[in-house]
Length: 263
Length: 257
Picture 1 (cartoon, each protein chain N blue to C red):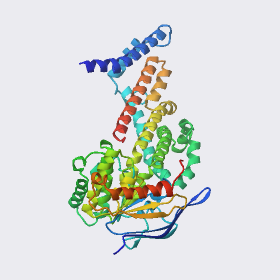
Picture 2 (picture 1 turned 120 degrees about the vertical axis):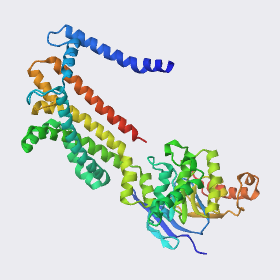
Picture 3 (picture 1 turned 180 degrees about the vertical axis):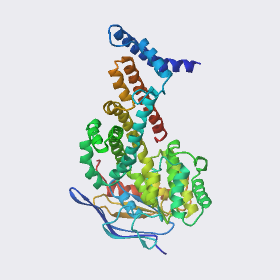
Picture 4 (picture 1 turned 135 degrees about the vertical axis):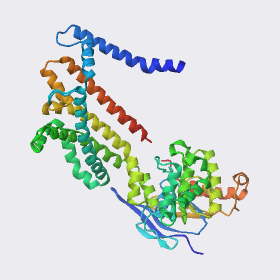
């Protein structure tokens, strides 16, 4: 099977005043189409750095990074990014925010009406058709994050990259959006790489959980395959023995093998 | 009804009391002074002055309306030219660190100089009073526009730039959809500060250059020893300045996110 994202021997270091800081080293990861992969680890382990490398916002100091067999040489619309703090432009309505992305990708080949249809479709996918002409400051945090997802998906990316997309939301909204994300991923058959520090979120959503060791010079510690059948239901999983086993494995990795002293 | 009463009590009454006290103090001072005219005398003088604001009796004797419009015209031209040059320059200084470092010592050095110090240079170069006055307005309003626009560009959140990079936006789209709207509130602050300074400076500049204008008019009335008119001029300058400020605050409110 063709690998969608290939990361081989990647190393990332930053030049600081105290000398070279190695953030990531020896990263090897292959992601298949349609796969949902989460990156989990303590803060400062470089999981966001790894995501930014895939996004092309950062360039690795060493190693090979490919997306659909093409080298990642910078950010591109084939990789849609959902930012932690939604990053919507406050002077544009939800519709205009998504349209900005749609125009860039399909503007050359499609007419105005088709572009607007695509934008509308992306917003209806996240159930926000009723709020499309509102400005970001007029809607809730959860809705903003949904617009962010719609914006990323509207470009029909090969991979959807999410950097702690639900980290800033309250627990109920987060659960709601996780359920919605599962449905959207199923409908669109998206390949997803998501950074999280929430163990339950990782187990609920992922096909594989990539667990990272503590920095500096962080690397991939273990990869856990989540073999729970899909579609998954959070209520049913609450009493599922396998779910608790998997959850336990992640917790063990984070709090025993990679225990971190309180900062 | 209750709401209106509350509005009257909280928002209308205190300013009215303030104005009342102000006029009272003024009247008391005038009562004990031979030279200073009181509010009533000034009011009568203002009524007759504003009953014919647009008369022309030669170059040195024109109505108050002409004087105000001439001053506003000078401020408009000087300020407009400053915006035309200062705002694009501010964008470039904010965007390119090299240019920022290059210009920053010059801007820091020239900004604290009183704009009036530039008047002789203006007279020397333009060899006429009117362009020299406009030149002074230009100099006084360009600094806040450069500095604030550059600050707005510099404070552009990294998030927005990341969005631009991820969406692969063209330079033009980055400018129209991100850079310009994000900088607009800062730019408007610069414009507001600039027009405040410009209006402040025009009176002094016109006192020195002469011609038709509110500043010259004040000087002329001083030479005529018409103190009521000087007081009226102070009010006129204050009210026009307040109107300009209010107008720009209203515009700025529309563009704050």
